[in-house]
Amino acid sequence: MTAPKLPAWTGRSRHRRPRLSDEVATHVRELIISGRLGGGEFIRPEAVAEDLGISATPAREGLLQLQSKGFLQVEPRRGFVVSPLSPKDIRDTFEAQALLGGELCARAADLVTSADVRALQEIQTRLERAAETGDLTGVEELNFEFHRMINRIADAPKIRWLLGSTLSYAPRRFFPSIRGWSAASARDHRAILRALRDSDGDAARAAMTDHIRRAGTLLTEHLAQETGRSTEPDGC
Image (tube, rainbow, N blue to C red; front, side, top):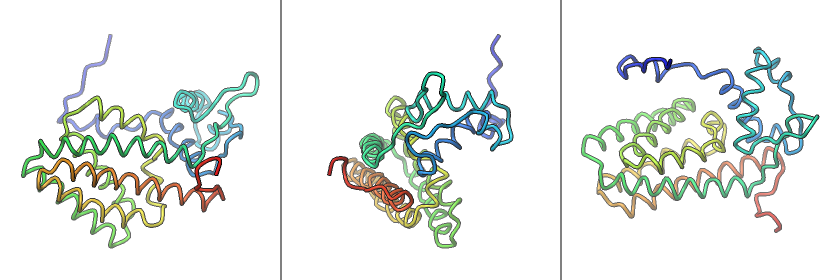
């Protein structure tokens, strides 16, 4: 028997605490993205469980999630090992995000209403205020809200799903620590808003594509500084 679906107005589904296994996956994924866990390192569910103060079962479930997404591999009789993650991997992921996000923004430009533009402008105003005051968590949350609204306006659920499948390599909570990200986010959104206000699909696609690529560049450079890895393409 399936549980009854909660009415949207209750708000409970939006604010439900993530499952412990999801929290584990998020925690370990960010360790990998940040370079604190490098390729070839082994990671034990018991150690993760101890770090997070939980039992080993959800820890193992979270690591299995990351295995299914390519962050971890399983070696027989040895356990979970971190998959290599190069700057090229990051660039390739953000290139995919840029193409998908650009297409969604172009479609949104054809469907956006004046009320939508006003709502997006209000989000942007709050985002810029948060950036000015150094509220990096606020910038991250408002940036997510800005992009989510555009993606919903686009009315292309399959493209939105494909975009979502790439976001594991860009953990939301990690971006505020990247130098220059908050300022770039506030600045780039203005060009996106202008294109949407003008219902200019080509300009909207270009603005969103440039914005996401710039975020990828900032992340790659940040990781290079933190880990000493070169930002040059592999083999150069």
